[in-house]
Image (cartoon, rainbow, N blue to C red; front, side):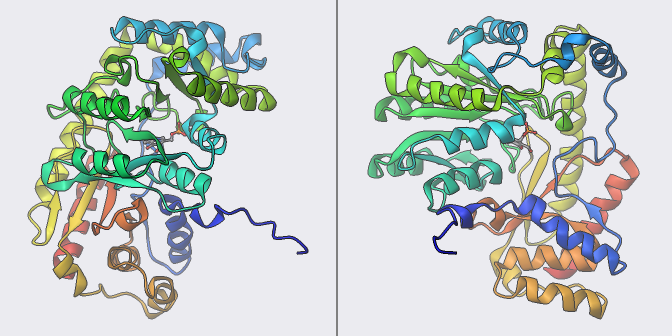
Length: 429
Ligand SMILES: Cc1ncc(COP(=O)(O)O)c(C=O)c1O
């Protein structure tokens, strides 16, 4: 090429959660039966969408307006309804204009970071959810800047670490948090959220809170929405129907913008997001139009409660089994539907690889040469036990471990996954 056409952030675009699938699929062709525990798709793992939610979607399919464009920012009625939900909780008040729809939060995240000034950094948690950390890193062209989540304190954010980094790095313009968190399952109490907002207030930053799992909280977890604690600080909450209905294939997510008028620079940034969206026209109409009907249905509360209790029970079941293995530490998740398995670094350093067919080993070995130890173990689990998980090193973390999901819907199959995992880890560590 006469000119270098590769963008500075190209090397930062990593998504281990999906990258490992290519390897797993190849192993299947070599005869390894595979269980996919890498991706957070409840439908793929056997959950049926409630018949009444399907009925609502089916009803919309037969309405002409479902086939039309919406306004650039999203369907007016849906945005007004969502603003009423925010206002009904108390705290910051917004109106429909403060809500912008995207084709899933993945789209919201990439738009947001694509149009954030390159020098402005957003500090996020470690372990990190790769869509967010990679988008942030790619926009800046450098590695993602992170604060620690503390496994010895139920994965709560290390607020001293956060504040020190904010204080000494004036490129930081925003604080990112995921509540409930992916991959740790941590749920941040109101007090912790208030302290994060307080840091943002004192250093003149905005807060970006991913609330994808806001309605999947269990096992005594207590939290609130960002809107309830944000006060007068500029903030953005990110919401989605992917994990709640669940309808991940609907590609429907939105942002709620708080205190836009209070800061001219923040307001201009939000206007840029809308201007960018205008070039795209709008997001997919039908899933947006389902939201007032689904959220407003008396069965929705029961639906959310039932699912939260279900994941709560699955979390307890998994933690009890996995925590019996020497060298393994798992904190009980209180939200979302993931589990982070931490591995003792000493044992991991000398782990005993599982046996596998020579063709499988020949394929995997070059892929893990020089890789972090947890990735080596995860790829060994892939070839030796047919379990596809995601190494924690793929989540911007220097703590060794991996992430699994709580999504397998078939009770017997789920138990056999934990048994397979527990048996394999006991032999390896
Ligand atoms: C924390 C978090 N944010 C965002 C997303 C993406 O959601 P969506 O399907 O709305 O793009 C996910 C998906 O797993 C997630 O876990």
